[in-house]
Image (cartoon, rainbow, N blue to C red; front, side, top):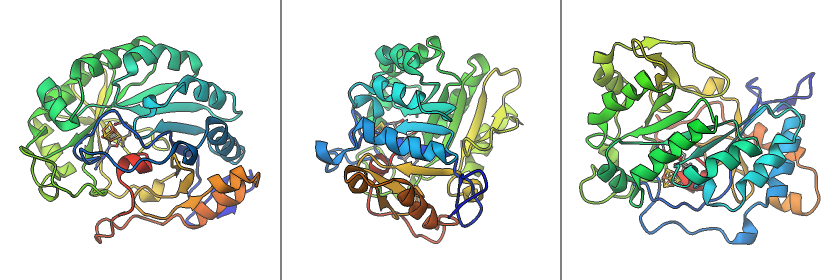
Length: 335
Ligand code: SAM
Ligand code: SF4
């Protein structure tokens, strides 16, 4: 790691870190089949989870050294109490230009307005299907209508652009890719099709689902499925995300692809992650973590821990070589 002339965080491969992804909790009000087992995971105890003041302190130090964007995720970030209070704290940190959240939107209908008022700029919402019964089956507890009302509330509150994340599962929602992409015809939304990642989710998902190793559907296959829509490439906002975006003829939004397996975007990775239990994780897809919470609670400075995490940031993930992260599932890492 290196602190360049402006004092910003740069790793040994020259990648400048401008984006911090913060998991607020390892808890969730849903149990999506590809993310967590039906019975849940072993949650951390309350005192093992970072307090808002502690999260804000890490963000403040990161922002002093180049971080400009913060995404709140989880687990489900909105199951944590009083999230607008944290957002207000982050919005008050100099240099932070963008605050976003990834949510399943189950609680967004009532939360969108207070979140926006506190300073949240935009939301990414997970939506794998437009069919209520299927939605309930994939998420195990989810209610499609509630989520849809959450999306509309986010739009009404000005949380824009709205991005919809669809994890593509072979034989489960591959028949709906055209319908999901077609949402971008009428809505200024960005629909993003995500390749399924083999992150500690390799147990059987239950009746009616393919085995996890057969559920993967590649970006190439997605593009073939969407070929009738004649997608036109549009410039991407590289710097804030790995999606490749396209427009449907006459559409007001976009459809895009996120391909951690098929297309390497590691060379442009500009992010660090902070887990809910206070570990800095340099790469989603590697088990390397640097605990920062004990140091924070002991009153030590945070910067050396950010520096250490950067030193350990791998040049690229090794999923293709079958080196998978084993120790935590997506919701514990903060997907
Ligand atoms: N609960 C929130 C939500 O669902 O939007 C935020 C946390 S969730 C872990 C973040 C994102 O990770 C979601 O869009 C989810 O679909 C995605 N995700 C979870 N498990 C995944 C997997 N195995 N492969 C690809 N994406 C996954
Ligand atoms: Fe919960 Fe999000 Fe994981 Fe679904 S993807 S179980 S909503 S954390």
